[in-house]
Length: 84
Image 1 (tube, helix red, strand yellow):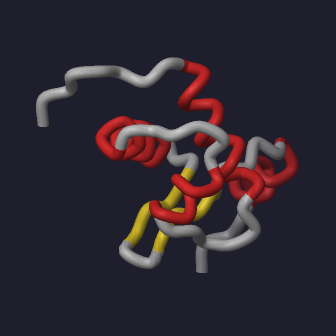
Image 2 (image 1 turned 180 degrees about the vertical axis):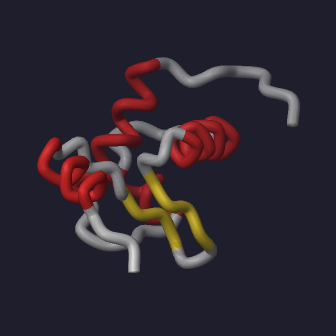
């Protein structure tokens, strides 16, 4: 895929905010609808790929879900968790 235009930080943060505030899984079309500004499909896909590679979202055929949680308590619990 040839990337013609990279998104600005402002656009990435705009997408992050909508995904963080979504209470359930949302589709790409619903995400586009909730964004305050229009965004090109290719740009949105690039942002979603970036967020997924960073472990901040899950992107599946059912939709997109924000999963990132920077809580130190959660990190500690995962680190101390037992494997059965």
